[in-house]
Image 1 (tube, rainbow, N blue to C red):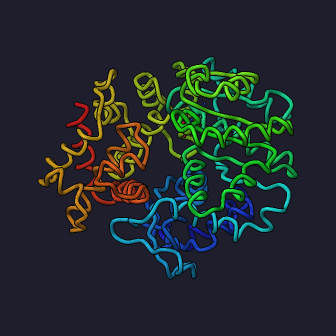
Image 2: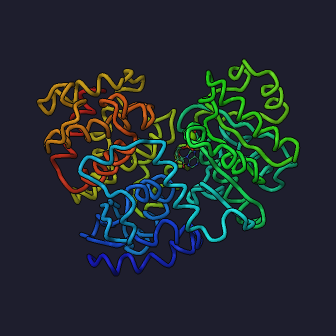
Length: 466
Ligand code: ADP
Ligand code: MG
């Protein structure tokens, strides 16, 4: 099948049921299928912020439902077309992404969510910020995460009374964010009257600064205090931000007084941070703290099996074993390796064999103790590969070949380092973080479409890791 409308019509119903009416109406109302070549589908969205939200929250669900409708794997890419959904007052995309003020962006995206979520905020059963793709059903357990998962389930079963706060910590890519959303989704489904809010600390912080500037602090406070389950991700970012810690503490205190549930995640144990505020620390330590460790081989294989099933592609056991045996510390990377080999096989219509996986993942395997790739190194390697200077990459110029080089560089930064979108954006000449989000999505799409782009990314990866 290569009819984009048929493909989209075939999955829209299931997707709508899966995400719920509110999310569907808010984010998918203006989405239109544009092109489909049997493997890559292009979806037109009315604004960049809608694309961002779909990518960060619903991409797995979209990919899975498309794959089901197509009876085969589908690669999704987006184009922004302001004419699509009648939202022309929102900014339209430009070639290099939108360069605008980040605080204003996050505020605008909230405005959209509120304007179109029926009845918010007075209606019961609100669920804010949840990614419906992250559920307990999709979470594979093993000795590394069994306790964390059990604690998360206990909290989801009896919010506010089992463990409060629940504090989950562990390294990057080990499933913290997944568990937070799983709790939220479970509560939303089983206790429809409860109000659930998920927020990354970075978003909270940005909104906090913005609301001080616009004197809208009261609204913000209301928003995070007036809920039954508050899920705050990556609270290690609070470190060193005293004014914000203070505000955050008041928010938590409201919840402690009302016995509403708080769940927090961080990359390290709570004893080791927030040392400046003793009250907050003792409150935090009064709940239960649980760690997630890197998964053992058996768990890694189970996770790979589950992900392969989800994207509807047959991967030989020996390929899964090869990936599982060689990527140990980060489940996001585990998924990344699986996507890399399956995308290559689809793109080249080659059978997915062990030999192919070994060839494609040689760099990952060789770098079991990977050389620390820095943003600076990526910038230099990108400049070299494309024949520009680092200053060119950081400059405001939007000349076409330069834009592509910059986007490839941003994509590779995202792949090979743990830095956030805003940090990468700063390194590339102080751009807005939405530019990086746009670049990652653009290159992800182009890699499955243009051999040259795929090769450029792989070459950079080889130079940086090999
Ligand atoms: P963290 O927040 O700890 O950095 P995430 O929750 O974002 O990590 O997880 C990274 C990726 O790995 C996500 O796509 C998530 O679904 C997946 N993942 C992590 N742990 C598991 C697990 N136990 N089972 C299935 N998928 C997992
Ligand atoms: Mg996370």
